Length: 115
Image (cartoon, rainbow, N blue to C red):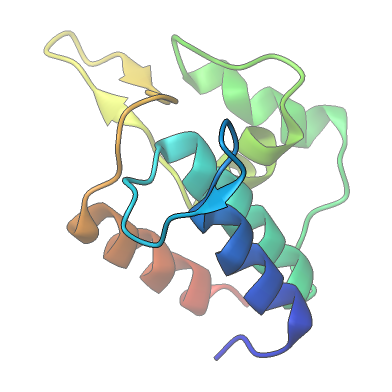
């Protein structure tokens, strides 16, 4: 279990609507917001990878890669987010899509399995 100030701060920051600056615990969560939460969790448990070209190249697998985004690079490198596939087999980060409860549960299970 992740405990402490870092985890609490991470969870609270995801619930804040950045445009209005208001805490909204019932707001939908985008995949990008999930990537930020996961990165904060990786930092809190000491599993955040050293940023390198190898880590950043993990985004090359996605057709809609977000160049220069360390949040996405880290979660992709650690295998937490594998993207969405289309009918042609291309993988996408789908950064502005919303996360389903099942997707979040799967990603959290991957996070807990990290060694």
